[in-house]
Length: 155
Image 1 (spheres, rainbow, N blue to C red):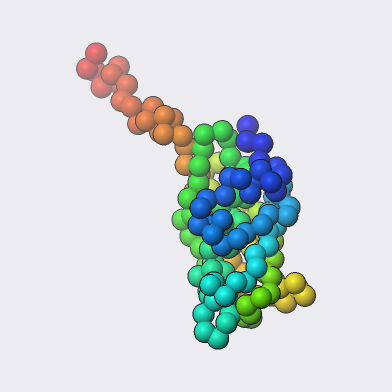
Image 2: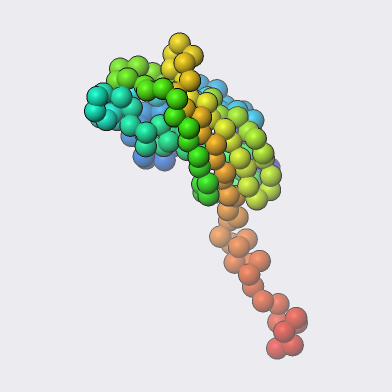
């Protein structure tokens, strides 16, 4: 049973500190899709005042990770195991980018997401495809690694 994270405000509260630092604002949340916005601030830019590629990637990574979280059972977590970014256009300081993250695969052990990042007029800035590994709760992992004394003959 997935946690109740189906509202932008609930997901906003769940955001990690680094993502808060970026200023990400969620607008739409469902198990298949997450949409968020981010203002391109000067402190996120390179020279000449365009959004740093790492900030673009971090924005998309946050969307894919939290889209996975929306689908997790209580106590489960996630980590990114693969990410690929294609850059198409710059995002100048003072503009807003929009990330539209959609599910490519939602399985038991992994989920894959594609995030299209555009500016406010719809121009494509980047596409990020990422894979998230689903991590079981620590207790469940410890129990699954436990050795059954009956199977080893050391009762």
